[in-house]
Amino acid sequence: MLALAWAVWRRQKWLAILVFVLPLTAATSVVGFAPNLYQSTATVLVDRQQIPEGFVRPTVTSELETRLRTISQEILSRSRLDAIIRRFGLYANRRTLQPSEAIIERMRSDIRLDFKSGDPQRRGSTIAFTISYQGTDPDMVAQVTNALAFSYVEENLKARERQATGTAQFLKVQLQDARRRLDEQERQVSQFKRRHLGELPQQMDTSLAIIDRLDAQLRLNIDSQGRLGERREALANRAAETPITSEDRSRAGGDNLARTPESPAETLARLQQELRTLRIRYTDQHPDVVRVRSAIADLETELGQSLGPVATATPHSRPLMTPYPGRLRPADDELAAELRALKAEERRLRDSIALYVSRVQNTPKLEQELKELSRDYDSTKELYVSLSKRYEEAELAESMEQRQKGEQFRILDPALPSTVPAAPRRLRLLLIAGVLSFGLAVGAVVLAEALDTSFHSRESLRSFTSVRVIGLPRIVLDADIRRRQWRFRLAAAGTTLAVSVIVGISYFLAHGNDGFLLW
Image 1 (cartoon, rainbow, N blue to C red):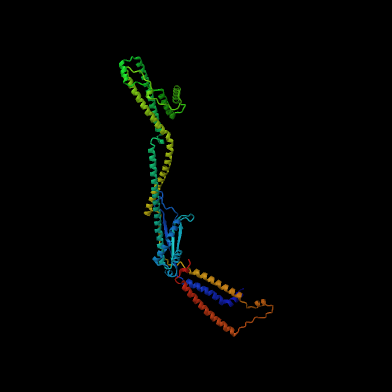
Image 2: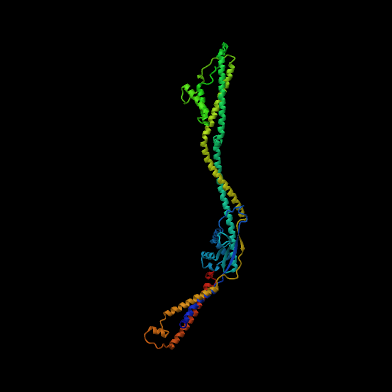
C-alpha cells in the first residue's frame, strides 16, 4: 500500500503540489491582507424602581425584554443609524461603492445586543444587557459603542416618560368625559326628584304617616260634627217646646232659617269616602271597614240607591225648621258656624287624604323610573371614582418618571478600545484553508490517476493482456527529455504567474475590506 502511494506521489507530485499551493496561497493572502476587526462592548445595568411599588404603581408594566426590543427597533432605524454613520465617518470606503441601505444593513449586522439574566431558569429576570460593535478602528469602535449605549439609556427614559404622560392624558380625558356624564345624570335625577317631590319611594312612609294623621283628624272632625248635630237637635227640641212670639217670627223672616245638620245623601257620600280611605290602610275584614260598609248598606237600603255615584244634596233640598225663639237664636247660629267650619275642615282633610293617597299609589311606578335613573348614575359614579383613583396614580407615576425615580438604564462598564483584534481569527482560518487545500490536492491526484490509461507496472499490464510479459523496460528519448524540460519551465512560470495573480487579486479584494472577516 505504501509502495503504491509512493509510486502515485512520484507520478503526480507536481499536480498535487500545484493544487495544494494555489488555494492555500489564495486563502493565506486573503487572511493576511484583510484588516483587523476590533470589537468593544458596553454593559448597561437595569436599575429597578427606586420607590416601592406599594407606594407608587408604575404605568410602564411591559416586560423588559419586550421594551428593549422595541427600543432597539427605534435605535436601529435608518435615520438613527445614518446619523451615527455621518457623525463618526463610518464605512468611508464603502460609501462610493455601495448604496446607503447596504451600509446601514452592514452596521446593523455589526451591532449585537445580549441579555444577562439573574436567573437563567426564569424568563423576565434580566438585570443587565451588553451592546457590542465591531469595526476596523479600535478607538472609533469604542466611541460608537458608548454612543449606542447612551442612546439606549436616553431612549428608555424618553419612552417611559412618554408612556406615563400618555397614560395620564388618556385617563384625564376619560375622567372629564365621565364627569360630564355624571353631572348630566345628577341633573336628571335632581329634576326627577323635584318634579315628583312627595311621591318618591323614600317619602312613602312619611306619606302613610300623614294619611294616618289626617284620617285621625277626619275621625275627630266627624265626631265633632256628630256632637254638634246632637246639640242642634236638642236645641231644636227646646225650640219646639218654647212658644214663639210675633217678634221671633218677624226676626226669623228676615234671617236665614236653620237647616238640618246633614242629609242622608251627604252622610252616604261621607261614608263612601271614609270607606275608600280605610281600604288603603286595612283589609276588607278589618272591623272599621266592616262597620262603614254596613252603614253604607243601611243608607242605600233606606234611600233605595245602588253603590254608584251619589248626587250631592244642595242647601235648597233641606227642609226648613220652625223659627227659633229669640233667646235660642244666637246659640243656634253659633252651632251652625261651628258646623260650617268643621265641614270646611272635613273637605280640606278629604282633599289632603286624596292627594296623599294618589302619591302613595303612584310611588311604585316612580320607584321603577328612579331605579333606572339611579342605576345609570351609580354605574357612572363608580366609573368616575375608579378613573379618578387611577388618574391620581398615573399622575404620581408621571411625576416619578419625570424625576427619574422609575426603572432606569445605567452604563455600568463603558466600552474601551480593544488591543486584541476580534477578527479575523487567522490561525483558525489558515488551518481550515490548509485542510481544504490538502483535500483538493488528494482529490486532484485521485482524479488524475483515474483518467491515466498508461501502464506503470508489470502487474497492471499482465492484468490487461493474456500475453506473457517478461519485462517492462523504460524507454526515454532525447525528445522526451527536452519536452519534459519545456513542460517544467512552462509549469513553473505558469505557477509563478498564477500565484502572483492570486496574491494580487487577494490584496485587491481583502485590503481594507472587512467583508471577508468572520466572527
